[in-house]
Length: 271
Image (spheres, rainbow, N blue to C red):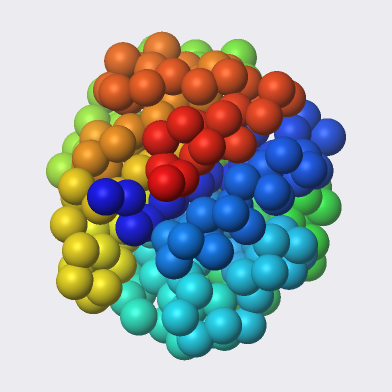
């Protein structure tokens, strides 16, 4: 029986207009009324999730949960951290130096700020700042020593990001044993410690609640959702998901503009 539904936010929970569809709210409310824990699982910081938690009636609760920064933080929606694993300053200096070698913008995001060491601030840094309602700040690498770093992000035009990954793969290769590189959007390549991903975060939460993968449904669309869809006993890909996510899922629902999350919850989770 499904007891946890882990749901990605962007292009999954939300429509293309970054809104919650009425059918989605209705289905999630029905699930929580049956005692199912609906867990928003996202690359965003908590501040970028709060509005949606409020609309779903899940905010500021000690027994409701949220996964942020692609699994680096598992917490209650009231803000109590249950598990956390961040990048170190040494990690940051290596990853930022890599960005300069492959000529990509790089940023660090935490619950207070989005930080970039590139004076030529990228347009997608501005976009991310606006999307998740968090201030954007310039800091030199030396000034980042005391900054909390749940995750980093390589960001640029999709064609530039793809070209860097394909043509300069040898530059990224030495780091892949220590870090997870996850494409969360055509213009975002997110990076966390190797042990951090949405799947491991959902597994930690399930264990704390005395549950197993068989009790978990996960819904997503992008590469950073793949780990939780592979972990879950019931993995669901959105109709707008990338091919690898659809291949890993047991079910494919409709897209995010046609109530895909609501359909999945209604057909697969509700009694």
